[in-house]
Every structure is written in structure tokens, then in C-alpha cells.
Image (cartoon, rainbow, N blue to C red; front, side, top):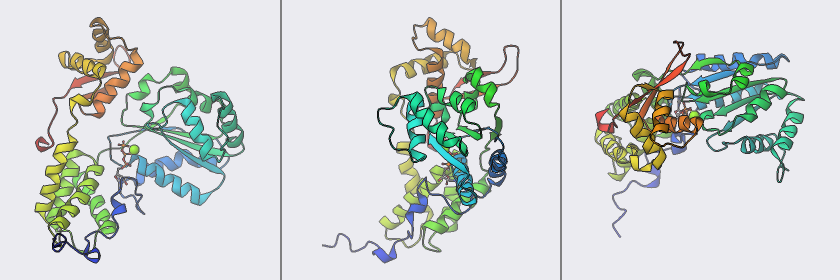
Amino acid sequence: MTLFNDMLKGDESLFINDNALDFEFLPKILPYRENEQRHFATCIAPLLQGRNGRNLFVFGAPGIGKTAAMKFVFRDLEDETDDVIPIYVNCWQKNTTFKILVEICDQLGYKLTHNKRTEELFEIVKQIVNKKAAVFAFDEVDKVEDYSFLYSIVEEIYKKSIFLITNHRDWLLELDQRVKSRLMPEMLEFRNYNLAESKGILEHRIGYAFAPGCWDPNSIDAVALKAFELEDIRSGLHLLRESGMAAEDKSSKKVLPEHVKTALSKMEHFSIKPKDSLDDDVKFILSIIKNDSGKKIGDLYKNYQKEGGKAVYKTFQRKVRKLADGKFVSIKTVMGGSEGTTSIITYQSIKKLTEF
Ligand SMILES: Nc1ncnc2c1ncn2[C@@H]1O[C@H](COP(=O)(O)OP(=O)(O)OP(=O)(O)O)[C@@H](O)[C@H]1O
Ligand SMILES: [Mg+2]
């Protein structure tokens, strides 16, 4: 067989640790997010002194270090003390009060959750946590279907800090007033990285993942530029891996701009979210928004109902956020105004990656 002759041998691979390109990989340092991590820490600090902590609402675009910053702070907290329990829940995976409580019990080391009701689970959490203090991080919190876990935690856990993390600033608007007024969270926005920061992060990651010197500087620039344009470090990490593989496919010992180009052309095919992946009601909502782009969400809901839409307002809001996740629409929160704070929804004609 000559099939494998031209390929790089195992010890010639360009990758030395490709786990470092995984989205979950936590590097040793998280540059450019020092202020945000410090803000997280100041909310938690009172717990270390036996007082109640502060709550924080964290929002910002996808792929810019919100989850990573939270995990960093938790790692530091665990190194510092056993008296404050860090609890991290991804609400995309655990999207009901029941599932969230099972998850929290699990993290607290309580395994006998089988056949228990929601109230019983909360009692267990309360028993354990109220002996100490806890920081609760609810990541992707806009994906939850009911908020009663929040109400219970705010009301019945004595010493805690609650972090709510989301892409959607407007999610806070729809949160039940009873919960909101008890939570009184501080707000923290994660801004997008600029070009130099995007490059710094990706270069750092190259240092972990690839053999020294195998990245041509122009190739790094090309990946950094794309990650910056897409405003998403995750797409940069993906491109690093794909470019490295494209170079290996050509038995090249360097990742050259042409390999980045190959990776970019592959990305175009799967990054554009097809409208077909949306369910019928979401598509219907998109058509309502398209006909009346730039309107308040409440008015769009009225149009939706008039045209025969059946979902309740909360579900409607959730579906609009789903459209925003796919970049089909954009949501702008307008503060104040005669009717209080509201969201303006604007239709976005879908851009191909090549148009960015
Ligand atoms: N400042 C940074 N330094 C190093 N790596 C970073 C930095 N910011 C983000 N990353 C990396 O980029 C990837 C995406 O970050 P993260 O998962 O924290 O995004 P996110 O803001 O939580 O996005 P989403 O809203 O989609 O959940 C992760 O692999 C993370 O480690
Ligand atoms: Mg995240």
C-alpha cells in the first residue's frame, strides 16, 4: 500500500495537544477578562466573611469567555476555601426546576434523588447548603422553562451568590417581578474582543496545541481576523484545528494561508444555519417579524395572535430569542420610555460567512 506514504508520521504531527482546542478546555490564564473575573469575585467575597453574597446578571455575545470566566473563578474559589460551595448548572441541558435540583443534589454528593419530588429535592439542597454558603451559576439561563428554583433559592438559602449568565440582556425583563425584586442583581456586560485580543487568545492557544513554529504568521492573522469578524473565539478555535488538519492532509510541516483558506471554505458549508432547521411556529414568527421589522416585541406578539398564532407570550419570547441565537433577527433592549423597558426586534437578512 502507498496510501499512507506521503502522510506525516505520528511523531511528525503538527498537533502536540489538540485537546487544547476543545471548547471546554480551560487555559491556565484567561487574559482580557481580568476585570470581569474581579467583578465576579467581589460578588462572592462577602460569603468568605460569613455574610450574604451579591447577585450578578452576566450578558454578552456567544463565544467571548463568559462561561470560561465563571469556571476560572470557581477554580480559584475551590483552591481558596471549602466553606463556599460552587454549583454550576448549564440550563440548556437542565431546563426545568426539577432537572436543575437533581443536578444540584448530584453536585452536592447526594445521589438518592430517584423518585423524589421537586419539593423534597429542594429540602435536601437547603439542608446541605444552609450549613455553609454557596455560589450558584446558572449558565444559558434563558433556556429554562420555569423559574421556581430561583425563587426558592433566593428565599430559602441564607448565604449565597447567584450568577445568571445569558446572551440575551432582555431575558431579565421577562423574569417574574417577585424573583427580580428579591434578586436585585448587578449587571455585567461582556464586550466583544477586538482584533488584537482575538489574536492574543488564539496565539496563546496555538502555543498549547501545536508544535512550536509550525504556524505561519500570516495564517495566524487570517484566523484571528475571522474570529474577530465573527465576534466568536469558538469559531477561531475551530479554524485552528481545521487549518492544522488541512496542513497535515497536504503533508505540510507548516500551517500556511492556503490551509486556512481550505478550513474557511469548509466552515461556510456548515455555519450558515438553514431556515429549514426551525420549527413551523418559529418560521411563522420569523415571517411576522419580517413583515413588521423594527417593532416592539409586544406589538409583534399582537400581530402574531391576530394571524392565528397560539403560543403564550413567554413561549413567543423564547422563540424570538431562538431566532436571535441563529442571527435571523436582532433584539435591542430599550430602557425607560413611556411604556417602560421593552425590546425592539429587527429582521436580519441572513448573511453568508463570505459576506462578513
Ligand atoms: N480571554 C480568553 N482567553 C482564553 N480563551 C478564551 C478567552 N475568552 C474565550 N476563550 C475561549 O473561547 C471559547 C468560548 O468561550 P466561552 O465558552 O466562555 O464563551 P461564552 O461567552 O460562554 O459563549 P456562549 O454565550 O455561547 O456560552 C472557550 O474555549 C474559551 O476557553
Ligand atoms: Mg457559555
